[in-house]
Image (cartoon, rainbow, N blue to C red; front, side, top):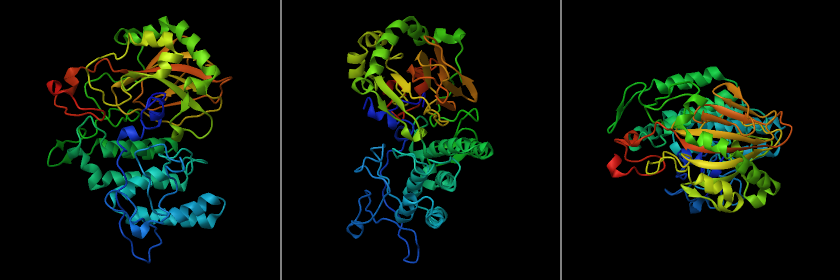
Length: 443
């Protein structure tokens, strides 16, 4: 996730998918295991498609639903157990009794469940990955509910259906172990538990796999090269560096292009921020921050220039069409592979540590307005924006952004750009990426 807005993850509303739906979280909940009457765990009876059966038609099957516009991932229905216990706690978080009952219920599921979809949905629920508002990590990032959510993710990583992705999916597709290991690592980091994050990192980077289709030696199944560099999709053979220095910008023509055309960009961007809703600004990645506002208007996405680009940024749009796509004909690993957007951040917004989906996507920022006090952190180092100046960096490294000390709303442009080392040879032997099929002549 670059300034990780703008993911997919329709041109505007798809933003909320990239980190999570885009990362392979597109399967519907199928079914929960049955349970004995003596168990306090509440489960939902469903058929093989995840539809509530007649026995459970009136069941309270989820805390959050699409009907109430509470979920941003439209391809997932978040069915889960312990609904009653969790809802009682949410309605009165000061009640220690309801809190303990809720924790007891989810911990029993953690201990006893072997159902892949149950573990997956509980991970999403406890870590606030799918909801439009923060519930479990609202007050802290290391409370008992968040820690339980991380444990669900770690248990899911060990599940045979999760590990089967090493056979079922190609190396440029989002595989279950890489995705949920990344999530667990990031959540531990945001909780201030670097030692726990490192344990997960070492465990998965040293794992091997011997399946019916593929065999991987230690270090081959998960090829991360650094503790702060954990994308779920890894393209080998690419230069790996958090920041791209100016002396390497000859390989990134978009950098000098943005600086040379800054006057045009600023003129149209500042007009757009006067009436942001009419200009197409929408919030996204709501799960990455609790307070504030972080909105984007997408200009280029899914190889298409948006209506907002044509109508709100007509001059800049015409210029961008000379630059994007940067490598026509090459497959994309993610719908984020190349994008262009203008992003504004409200004073007081603080976005947690996160990272993008693939290591062949670079983020090119240029500061526009309200930059004083704004901060970008990449791989543990802080940076600031200057008006009309570019910062080129790799969004697959850990990063965070904040406007805690801003004087006014911060406005920048971001172009997601295919790594210049990505070539047709990068796709030799690859049938499909997470985003699309690879042309036969490249395989």
